[in-house]
Image 1 (cartoon, helix red, strand yellow):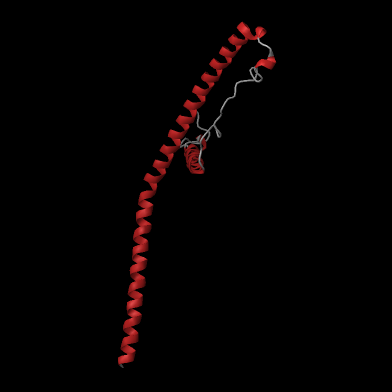
Image 2 (cartoon, one colour):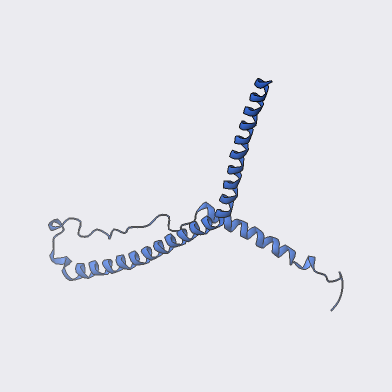
Length: 141
């Protein structure tokens, strides 16, 4: 009888431990789902900051390169004919321009959200289509 009781108690303890583990797992599951919207927003904000930085870099780099090309042209116009090419090889090379790739930052997360939003917008348009209106068919105004 004592052996049976010990086995039963041990099995009950094991079940209680497993239940506690499952309970903890589901609490974390709920917490993770509660935190998901703020994490998505944080990541999208980061992506927007990156895109703004890329856009600013591209604008500033474009302006810098345009200015450099003009200054090189001015130099070549003013002094180029007096300098032999062998004196400074590479002086007539084009401006090196650094580019950021990709030029548009768009994560698969943002793409999925945009696709979902487009699908929802399409569904909303279907609901508002004239075919679903309350007007009688063939009625004249």
